[in-house]
Amino acid sequence: MSTPPRIRPVRADDIPAITAIYGAQVSSSVATYEYDPPDAAEMQRRMQALLDQGYPYLVAELDGRVVGYAYASSYRARHAYRFTVENTVYVDADCHGQGVGALLLEALIEACTARGFRQMIAVIGEAANAASVRLHTRAGFRVVGTFQGIGRKHGRWLDTLQMQRALGDGDAGAPFDE
Image (cartoon, rainbow, N blue to C red):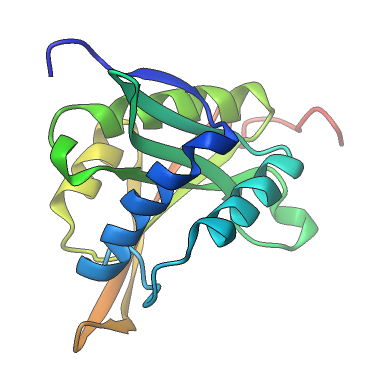
């Protein structure tokens, strides 16, 4: 990849590419514990729900083609967690290892910090996913725990790794709306 992809906010016409990228991960990997690839209508519904709640949703575009996407979502539904987000990053298999994920995650961190979020959690669907662990470590995340054998997919039990990174001042002070 000679020119870096452009990172921009998601648009409705990105849904077919997002659906294809995610569908491939659902079918062939344990990066997600979902079993059946959702269709474009469901991916559109999920995207819109996040945008309606004020979370950032970004895509990486290279030569007019969406090659990855990232978004933030609520870490947990309870009100006390409102300053903590969970990140999601997926990259087209043809672009793995080319820095697309790092660009998306960096932009997502900036967007979440600008919105006043104070912590970001990465829930890595397989503790042995070295690429995802490396991506998050380079972005300032640290391992905070491993849940052993809590998922089962493709005939095997899976450990789930959680990593955490402070955003802005993190927990060093009260947030803006308290």
